[in-house]
Length: 386
Length: 244
Image (cartoon, rainbow over the protein chains, first blue to last red):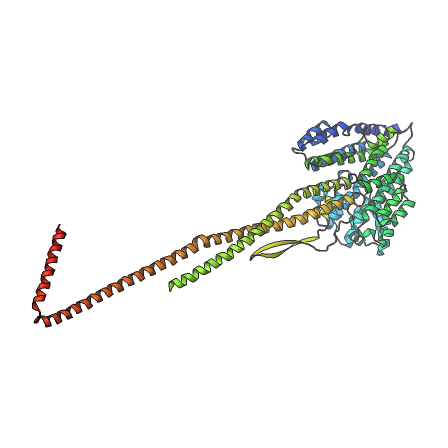
């Protein structure tokens, strides 16, 4: 394993790329821009305001701006920027950046598989894929080429997925499921019987564990910062899976300790004591009790219980944003790359939210987004008072 | 005889008119009810739809773009719209009902990793909107059908009231007038006949009298000459008066 390098050697390999990403940090939409955007009455106004920002160039072509167009343009812009960073990077940063894209690859593969089962057109599906998680064109096309029967799926895995970076997660998932199902090798059965969302959650779990292991092997500040971010993310997934499983078959007593438990990542602050308690949680109350044991999540849970305006998702997003912003505060580590992508994602969510609110004339809700690198962020206010 | 036929017709027309009038009133009452219900549903519809689409935005904010996942899923209808027929005063109104097919949603675990609650909230909102939409469709269709039926009924009522019944009445009065006329004619004819009969009787009597007179004449001749003189005297006077 190549070391990331410390204070004296980091910049030899990765200094330029880090400088790039720190330069890109300037492209975030500022507080005043957000303020102007929230004052807009029409989408044309929004577009006019955005031309001042970093998105100006990518929005030039569209005559009318819809939230969907904006999202597509912003995601494409992020992908271009990311590809640029990736092309400058050397190991182990290159690997790190690849790890970031695996998440989107998982999403794309799941989308392709589901689309194939529903018999959709491959070109349509490829057009919908997330640009950060693109495979080679031939790989994507071959996903559909396989027949949708048991042999077809087995072939699909052996010929296509095994080659892709996310193949390892698939094989882990199939192995674990087939142990449960009993009939080994029946990929199709596994794929058909398990819902796509559950497969996705399992794959994300393997991805998080893998990414975590990779980051801790890098050591140094990267490990410190990334492991915290990923731990929090793993905990978020565990809590969310539990919360969202209520009212679905996953909450059946028989499924709780087997199927649902398998979706909890084996990293994070909740693991192992917290996750074993989560596995027993049968309703919101018991989940709340588990959360109250962890101060970081108790406040998020309080949002879910008390406030209708802000949901638990908002609380998690806000905390993620704070963590990711903090990743920019120190140097000589990779955390800022991950943070950059995640913060951009949040920014895209914000912009889509604002434009949707403007379009649907929901003036009172327009401020329910999470400003990034804002001096007014709640967590900075708290720090100031301290 | 014809009068009897038309009297029957008139009775039927009036009866029909009364019945149709009743039907039109019943339809009008129902029509108002529907109009009220439509206004109410439409009033809430706008807000509900707005809320539903906004909840979708909220869900997308929390869970990312899950539209694809929904679109790629196998589409088994969870609700179906069935139509039944409601009968209002003989007018058949279509009624749409939402029926749960009992199919299990395949997207229950959507947003498992985040935003599932918001997606569920959005799902509930849209179910409500769908329910209202079907209700509104049902009401609106009934409304239009009712409107049509009401127009037809009103046209019939008006036709009966303003055309058919007056025409029958006209015919009836014509018939009675004709009958009266006939009666009068008969009467005068009878009178005339009676008169002529009387005259004839008088003549005959006069002739008989004359015959009697003649028979008696041999006895009383001067009387007759006196009589004749008196008559001629009057006649000349009459002629003079007319001339004058």
